[in-house]
Amino acid sequence: MSEIRTDTINNASGDNDSGIDLSTNDQVSIKTANTTALTVNASQRVGIGGTPLGYPFEVYGGNGDGIVFRENTNSVVNWFGALNSLGTVGTGSNHSLAFYTNGSERMRVDTSGNLLVGKTSNDSGTASGTIVSAAGVNRFTADGNHPLVLKRLTSDGTIVQFEKDSTIVGSINSSPSVTGIFIGNSNTGLTFYDAGSSILPATTTGLRDNGIDLGNISNRFDDIYATNGTIQTSDRNEKQDIEELSDAEQRVAVVAKGLMRKFRWIDSVAEKGDNARTHFGIIAQDLQDAFTAEGLDASKYAMFTSNTWWEKEISVDAVEADEENGIEAKDAYTYMDTKDEATEGYTEKTRLGVRYNQLLAFIISAL
Image: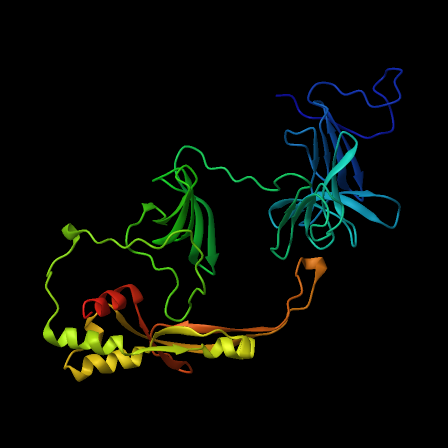
C-alpha cells in the first residue's frame, strides 16, 4: 500500500485547476496551530477534527460537540452532535424543533418538551392533532372522526391495560368467549355482547357465572329500572336439603307478617324534606329479634343480611392548572374510602338488610 501524501493548500499539482489535485490514496489536510482541522481523502470523504473513517462527512470532537446551524450570528437554531454516547438533535434556548415534509410543518417538539403532531402549540386539545405531553398527559383530538384506534391482531386478550404504580387495576380486552369487549379487572368485569343484546359478567379470560355482585353493602345502587322483574334460579336439580318449615319457623313467619311498617328514609328527608315519600317494608332488627325469640339464628337464613366494613373520609387538595405541562385545574374534594378489615383511623360500620323475595315467600307460608 502506497504511503498517503499530505499536501498544503497553496498550489495545484501541475495542472491548470485552481485546487489541489490528489493522486490515489492521497489526502489533503488543513491545519491550524499544528492541529488537523479538516481532512479530504481521495474517496471524497471529509473529516472535521479528524480523518474520515468511511462516511462521506464526519465530525470529531469532545462530548457535546456537533454541527451547528445559525439563523444569524447570535441565535442557534439547530445542531446535530453526540452527547453522552447518544446521537443528538437539539436547539438553542427558547427554540422549538420542527419537522417538515413537502414544504409544510408536520411535527414539532416545543420548548417544554411536548411532542406536537398536526399543530404548532399545546392548546390542550381544542384543535385537531396530537399532544404527547412531557408531563405524561397525552391528548388525541379529531374533528368529526374517532381520535384513536387501538388494534390487536391474531389473538384475543388485553388491548388497553391500566396501572396504578406497578399494580394492574383494570383493562379493556377483546373477549375470547363472545364477540365483544371486556371492561374490568382480572376476575371481575363486564362483556358487552352485541349479538346477544346483553351485558354479561366476565373475566379477562371469558364469561363468568354466579360470581359477581352488582354493588355492595357500603356502595349501593339506588333505583333499578327494568321492563321485567328479575329471574331467580329455582331448579330442583340445583337444590338440596329440601324440607318443610319447622313449627318455630312458621311462628316466626306469623310474627314477621305483623312486623310490616311504613317509613321514610333519613337521607331522602334530608334531601327532599316533606316531599320525601313513604315506603313499606320490615325493619331488619325486628326480624332478627323474631328469630331470636324462637331460639333461631337469623344469620343462618338468606332473607336476613348483616355486613360490616370500615370507612374514613379522605380529603384531596385542589390542583392548579399548568397548561404548559398539560395539567388541568381540579377543585378540592373528599371521598369515603372503605376497607373490608379493621384499619387504624377508620370507623367500623354495620348495616342490616333483608332479601324481600325470600322474606315474602317466608311470610306467605304462614297464611
